[in-house]
Length: 228
Image (cartoon, rainbow, N blue to C red; front, top):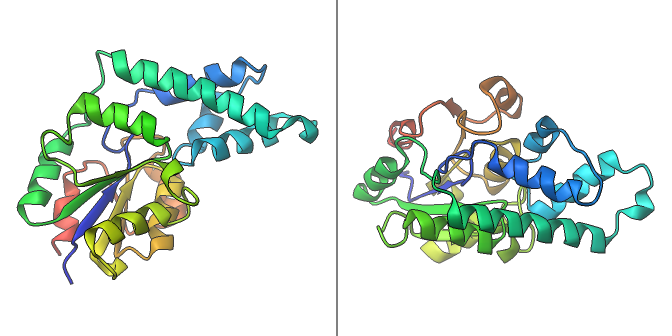
């Protein structure tokens, strides 16, 4: 059965990151006196961001009563503000190598393309607008984690795209991402192919324990995988 939809992550998978997301997380946490190392933040990439903040606070705040909804919301607001400001003005915002050509090749063979993310939709849309992917006709669907009931690793963003594409069988869907939660999202959705990429937060060795169907170093390899 052919793949009708490929769902790609954003930062680290299709969009060059260079630790800008990590830095924004660190800065927003530091405003509230939490000094979280970059490696810890990297391990929480891909999650819906308020959930990621809660996970990190749970690790670095000894008094759990201090982890309030208000604190999480304030840190998230600072994070969103920093990310939108960066993505609106960054001169180095680019697609990762071979991404746009891969999108074109998939479209040429009739495959739909969805972009989903742990970002909220406002951040995601800022990135898409800067890269002009909708104007170029490179993507068909986009979803932020705040547009569904629960973000990754839950499969709701993939389900949203399937509904929009009129797809009912997850064996017609592939998921591509650079983190643990990308892989779990694809597995939880029942995607035929769950593909990890080494261009983002996780190395090949860090991806292997989560058992994606494939681990690739070049996103162009997606074309050969789904064409099997």
